[in-house]
Image (cartoon, rainbow, N blue to C red; front, side):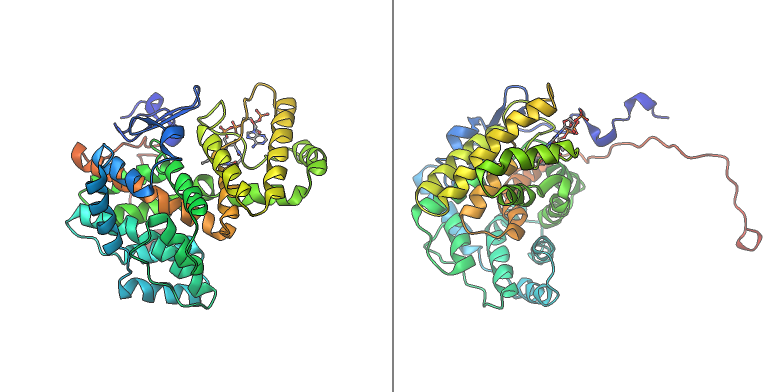
Length: 375
Ligand code: ACO
């Protein structure tokens, strides 16, 4: 019999894993990734360096990085079964996250966890870009061996080699959301791999968890809010109307961060650089004005709740600035988080213990079997 007091709805406050991958301190507004402050790592590392760091617990030297880049490049092409699934999904106009889940499942799970992890992380951009093109009635583009992970994604989407500024902005985004403690999708991956299952199954399960709007889905609505406001002079009226109606402002507030989400700062800086180099500078200025007004009004309407800008607000701005449509925001999040999921799966394999919590039975114990004819 489990004492009722042991039941934690949503497992809130329950520590269910040890990890060296990331540390989230919501009171200090601090995110540490594998020992590094996020703000130092994210704007500087190539995504391949980030993956290497998570998997090996140290940054690669130049020779190790070259070998790792080549390994990723060799694994980036899709098997025919995955492409067939994407074509079928495009005929049904399936949501991009569903298409990603289907094609990821075709990357065949085996006993070699590391080979599977490389293939999963390497192929995610290829899958998302191929699906986007198929949906648009275009032929998918082969990945280019001379381009890195982030640049390949942008190239495979539109067929143009991205410049350094755009590549850097995407890498900074991918690095920023690569891992975040025991979030729901990471927990799902750890549960699956803990049973002795394979890496592909763990990542496909994690994708399913990420798809839910409570986990991976706010940047689209956050951007819509900025578009709806349209110009800075309207911000106060629109935001007040929403708050008066009891609505939540998308892109603000966080369960863990009670000061500003450090990821928002990193992405705000990335957005500023991106929009300085070209693109819709006015949109960037508008977003900053909306943010300032929103923070002021949230303090007025929700005093003491400590509602701050969260990662989704600037995610929307960076990804939009890179030309990505809102439907690709969550799949792009998955392209990054696949590295975190696989790294957690390696940790869980090393921990070597099945995750098997308990439930508190709330039903009756006094029923007796009645034959069908007598019911
Ligand atoms: N706008 C207006 N009011 C808000 C907001 C918001 N964005 N967020 C919280 N509040 C208010 C609540 O209405 C509540 O008010 P009350 O005390 O008067 O009832 C108070 O602040 C506390 O809210 P909770 O729901 O207890 O906060 P919780 O920690 O559960 O919520 C959440 C966190 C879900 C992120 C919430 O802030 C929210 O809905 N934000 C908007 C959606 C969003 O941006 N989601 C992305 C989050 S980032 C991520 O998940 C990666």
